[in-house]
Image 1 (cartoon, rainbow, N blue to C red):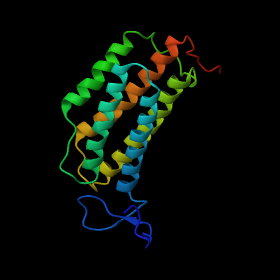
Image 2: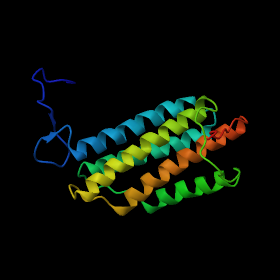
Image 3: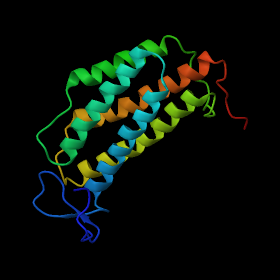
Length: 174
């Protein structure tokens, strides 16, 4: 059943936790942000035409489920090879891009803007998972934090690449 008809008093059950947690706790906030980036990557994936890039996003979504399980207290960890996978893609994209000389205005095209928006959600998820790690609520593996950091870098690289491909990478005028 999707609901209990009782309400929840602002508390929720988390896998691996023997007590109900406030929905405003660091763990539930981190899990919500991870769910948000995973869901939004589904939106981005639905807009991508290239099957290879769809597969990349799908693999990242799966990795985010592993991270969510870890944050919730399960004995799951992201593997080093997943970080290397992101770094390889970033490196390959960077070879195609001109050097960064300024901030860039989002919205060059729909897919570039979608990648940019996904990047901001990924950054928020990273900050929330860092908060869980700093508060020592759950033991967060260092590879998880590296993965989340690389994820936002990858999304930025994709945003720049798709903007450049349409000839629309624009810097702000100060």
